[in-house]
Image (cartoon, each protein chain N blue to C red):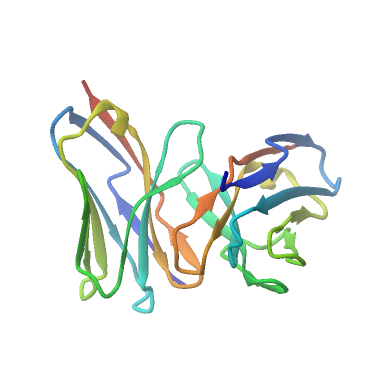
Length: 112
Length: 109
C-alpha cells in the first residue's frame, strides 16, 4: 500500500531533550516536506527536500533540522525542544515539487 | 515569500446547498494550487488541484477556478452532503508551498 509513515504518533518530552520524528515513504517520491499545524495558523512548512541530499528551509525552520540521505526517509530532528514547538507535525511527499502531496498520519508533540 | 489568505474561516450550509471558499495569493510565480480536506483527527487529503495554465477544473461535485490576473482561486462544492463537513485548506506555490489558514465547513442535515 502506498503510504507515508510517521513515527511516533504521540510524543511527550521535556525541554532540551533531543528527539527525532521519523518519516518514510514507499512511493519513490522525489519531494518530501515537513509541516506543523497549529490552531488558526493552518499548515506551515518547516523544511522541504527536492531530492536526496537537497534540503531547503521553509517558512518556520528555526529549532529544527532535517536530513535526506536516502530517497525514502526524511527525519525531523529537534536538537533542543522548547514548549513553543508543541504542535501537530505532518510529513508529506509528492512525486515532484508541484504535485499532489501525500501526508502521513501526523505526530502530536508536547514539550513541557 | 508567498502570502495565502483564505476566507471564510467558518462556513455553515444546509445539505444540498453550495459552498464556496476563496483564497488569494501574492506571488505571481506560484503555479500550482491544490485544495486539501482534513477531517477531524485525520491527515489532510488532496481533493482537487489546478495549475496556472488552466482557468477551471471540475471533478463531480467539486470545482476550482483560478484567476491569475487577480491572484485568486476558489473552491466550489455543489449539492453538499454531511460527509463534506471538514476543514478545507487551499495552498499556493511552486517549490515551496504556503497554505491558507483553513475553512471549517459544516453541512447541516
